[in-house]
Length: 376
Image (cartoon, rainbow, N blue to C red; front, side):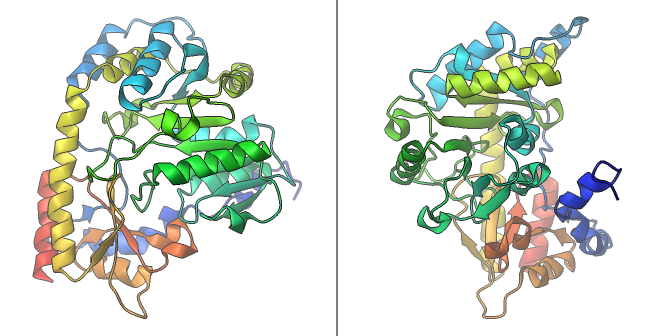
């Protein structure tokens, strides 16, 4: 089959992980009280009123938006980065609105002009879209949390993810700084996926952005940070995200995106500006998640599970201590109780003994999961 024929692209991609959950999902749905789906981190709570009002106010939007984004939206991003992420020396020329962070993560290697022979590094346990982005351009990808594990080759792109999906692990400032310095010494672009920055649960171990001066020294050369409003503002359906950092790299991405016609719709841009300026709805949603996390964590531990890391993000990374523990056996155990969780193997071989349990379900469904876990 010619490389340009239909189906050639799909053959280059890894299998879509969630397709492998079909059998377990069917078993979980057969539970008398219905399924409790804790396999994905999609928001279920209402979109904040401030976002809905901003969308209504911007509904009359007949013209094309510009790729670089409205000045008010870009300034709102800068203000949020300064206020919440502690960034310094950041201006509107260093930010760019995105149609969701996933499309950016998956398309970034292509937008950077990477291809066969280029090396990309991702965390040992990682969101599958990093691998997809590498596969689409034919680049090689290495999964490693150790800089020494990369070997002598110089990567073109290195991904960080703190707080981590799937583990919820928070990387300390010293480690982040070490990686920034390592990448700068070698001319490697560092991109930090920080979509769960505001989903932190351990006050003694709060996540820090790579744009914070304690990490980068106030210099954003060679680094980017990716942020999403899907989790912190229940805007997954709006596809609102942004990238920020090195103005030269942002300008390069802007040029590519202009030519591709990639632009955030103007109503969503106005929504983004409104929600980034409002901290109250974030605190309310944080409290909802904190309560669900507390109850699920206690029920898992009472059922004999060990929760590891999980100091941030919207997931509990858990296992049962045993020499023969297998993530798919754990998935089956949960499915028999009407609960669907994600196997750790979705995120790399290092996750073969764990499952990821999301606490983004409704209060009623979380309570049902807690009751089933307590029943054994």
